[in-house]
Structures are given as C-alpha cells and as structure tokens.
Amino acid sequence: MLGSSTITSTGVSQDWSVTGSVDATTNLTVGGTTTIDGTLTAQEFHTELISGSIIYTSGSTLFGNTIDDTHYFTGSMYVSGSWNLNGSNITEISNDTSLTDASSTALVTENAVKTYIDTQKQMLVDSHLISGNNM
Image (cartoon, rainbow, N blue to C red; front, side, top):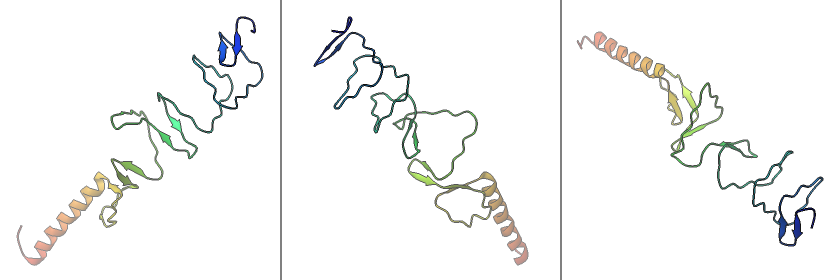
C-alpha cells in the first residue's frame, strides 16, 4: 500500500503518479483517462474511434474510413502525384486543346474541351466551304 493506492499483482487501485519511467514487459491496460505530458512513441497505434487524421510512416494521411464520410476544405489544396476518384486513377488535369494525349488518367479542362470543339467545328465548316458544299 502506497498512501491511498494499493498495488497488487492484478493492478493498482486509486490514482497513481510516477516520477521517472515505467517499463511494462507485457501489456499495460488503463481503465480510465490517461494524460501524457511528454511524447508517446509507439511502433503501431490502434484505436476504436477515429476522430482525426492518422499519419502513417509512409507520409500518407487517411481522412475517414467509409465512403459516406464527408470532408470540407476551405482554401486551396495542392496535390502532387496521382489522385484516385472512385477507383479511377487521375494523374493530371490536362489543358491539351487538341486532345491528342489520349490519356486514360487525365481530366481535361473546360477550356481544352471548348477549344477542341470550336476547332473541330471550324475545320468542318472550312472543309465544306473548300469542297463547295453548303452547310
């Protein structure tokens, strides 16, 4: 017995304060709130409730864990690398106005589509004018 705390082989009753280090060679279970004023270092971290972002050792960040999670961003977002949208890998936003890249991983801009359609339309008009056909 230490003060009002009792230490037995099955646990500690009441509050317990430690100055220095505690080494646990097997499991350490805390049944109440734990406050750590310093750094918590872990090889692996499991939670039963995720209420924030998790940064993996690879540098990846996971927001949410199901498809019905909704995230709102205010301001700008910069992405380098690829972006996966419902199973489709997006690697660029293309402003290729001739649409000749034939990329299966690029999204085209409104400007690229409009310019391409306008160009194709003008080429069609020009070809009919040259051949003498009226549109």
